[in-house]
Length: 388
Image (tube, rainbow, N blue to C red):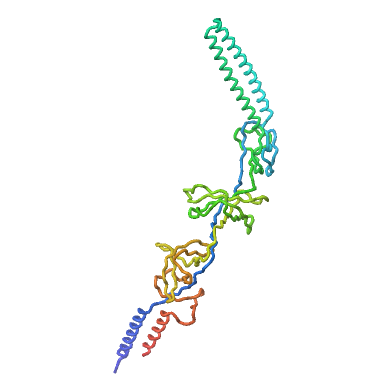
């Protein structure tokens, strides 16, 4: 009589053989990696340089006091428009007039003393010629004349200083613009160098920004700039590049650029944060791929191309402009090729792939992938072996 254990031994041996056979089949089966594939795009690329900066006044000056004194007149208020040379305030001009008169009176006295010294020298020279006056007396008269002439030069300088002080007592606008800030009041006593008023020009204004060292060669005077500021969303202000710094900033590796904007309505105000967009050129037939297709590796940037044999082919590429999650491929890809945009992070060169849609479903309803078909066949064989 056969025992239960003796009946199970052949069955166990059969199952073990079946499993070993299945493992051998699995070792020979190449599993296809599911990926999402997308064809490269051929587009016209509008190459631009985008930067951020700040609006600045073309001309802005802080007028400071050049003389000490009390402000006797204040003729302007903040926000008021002034013309070049217009009188803004006065710093005790009456006192400066009196000082000028005093200097002129002293100058007249020095003139009279000079005439007297000239006559004394003439008399001393005649007496010396007649052997009446000594050489010492002649030299003394000559020295007195030189001293008188020096006093005359000093007196004339004091008159000039007094005249300039009277002129500085009348503070005038250095250029046409607006009073941005008033720092003093009427009756206040000011010292030399104390700020009095700020004058600013708002038409035109300038936008100042920096571009990278890489883009510095593509910026030129006269290039059109589109400027956007937050107070006017959706509106673009157009200007022209007017100033390009002759040097690259060694710390930031950027180039400083200025563009001039017309501002007749005064809506653009200095100090506003600005976004500048420079149109450079348009290029036809540019190869574009999705940003997620490009992988960064130690040796550079690469993409995986899906071949007609459903293999992943690794390609190192040179990239260019990036915008709106799209990347320009300068070299490494050809028109008509397809790149893998999902499922490529762990791929190796030559890996078998299974094309999928973005929702994960196969691109075709048929089982056209060798790995999937072989995997199913191996499973069916295993079932049949187990039943025998």
